Image (tube, rainbow, N blue to C red; front, top):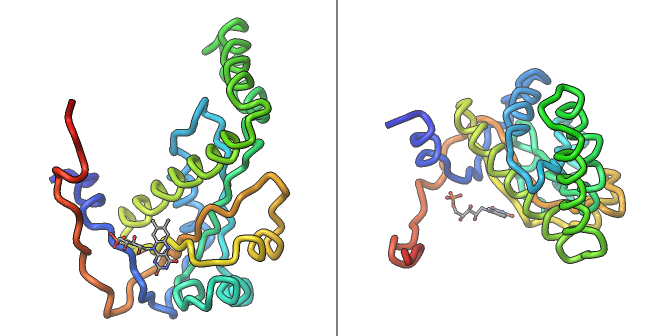
Length: 204
Ligand SMILES: Cc1cc2nc3c(=O)[nH]c(=O)nc-3n(C[C@H](O)[C@H](O)[C@H](O)COP(=O)(O)O)c2cc1C
């Protein structure tokens, strides 16, 4: 089995984390670097992570996450943030490709034009894209963590408005989910049941 398949099949949500385990800033940055490979619509990359790793900030976040212990017991809990206006950064983001000659001016202008045409004035799609990109980044982060030997736990159990206020999100940003990452403590559940293949797919 390839490492990738083992990572996909081995990941489960951890509830119990070793509270004595700490991750260095370099170890946290390595996970974020891997997460940067996440694909996004038009490559707009409209997500960011807040790595909550100090005891004080983890305690603050835990209070806003229905006191879920893993928020503070994991070495780091990431707040995955999606940006509903992130598409407006596209010209700056892809300019290095223009400068390097990987894109000509017409392709650059066309790429931006198509993106603006799709998202300008469409608040529903802008928010959808914040959640979609944040969710894809979250998945990359969980697989990166798994591949590096950590365990992870995604959470939607938190007060979104309170987290946005406490951690300084702007009005266009959405707290998509929390991802606790660290070393496992004993007692985590084994892999949970999944639907049958027939329930999950219809080939047409
Ligand atoms: C978006 C999302 C939100 C979740 N929120 C929570 C949560 O707040 N608390 C929790 O204990 N587990 C949470 N989970 C974990 C799920 O219960 C878990 O992924 C699911 O039962 C499947 O188990 P597995 O991840 O071990 O395969 C969440 C998972 C996802 C993907």
